[in-house]
Image (cartoon, rainbow, N blue to C red):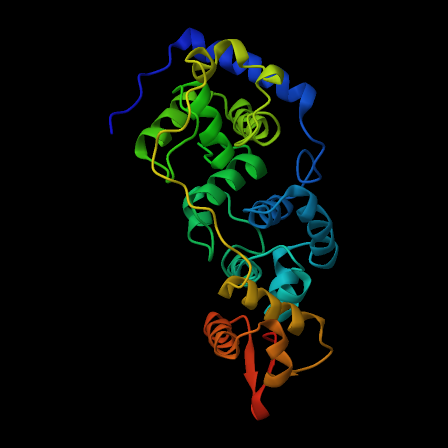
Length: 299
């Protein structure tokens, strides 16, 4: 796929000014913005992955109160991290956070590393999280690309209703070409584009009338053409292994001690599925098997 035509310097300058002014007036007051430790930023980025901010904030506050530094978390058991994860979804992220905190304690003096390369080397950290932490925790100039940013750029710059199902090289090049040269401004730009996608340029019901980029949006100028790319599959939930796995972890999280296999049958209606999910949770390190067919969160 060819790269999109480069955005002119004049148009880029207008985009920067317009969106940064909008963000200054409309940014949500989230606790991990502004005066926040790099560890707090790191936690927020991992917790916010595919999870609404409203669900993240109370858990984030609880984690920071209990584990104010990576070392505090690393010195506790991984099972306590899973227990404190609550219903944020994808509990493996809690294990990866504990593993990452252990690496920070052992290899980085108990600090969140600064460089994207070091961040990428942490367990469970991908390109988005590494770039976001480098930008938002340390103010480094980098290119942050998440679902919201991809959607804003697809519409405003490329004139498409939605971005492709998976990130393309052309998207990354386009996003990089728009990042301001000044590191501090670049960090604000990244979060401003993300905020616009989260609040205004949403996937299903974009509020184009409230968008600061309305007069500059290529998608609006083209008549808001519908998405013409590959079909997007919606993820089923009820009755899936993911639902049963979550129910098993929740039963263990709420139990005062080890739980028997029979008690875990309440997690699903199909006994073979429950067995399969227990086995997969054990393999993932989220559940620890004990004698007499009992289970608990890892210690």
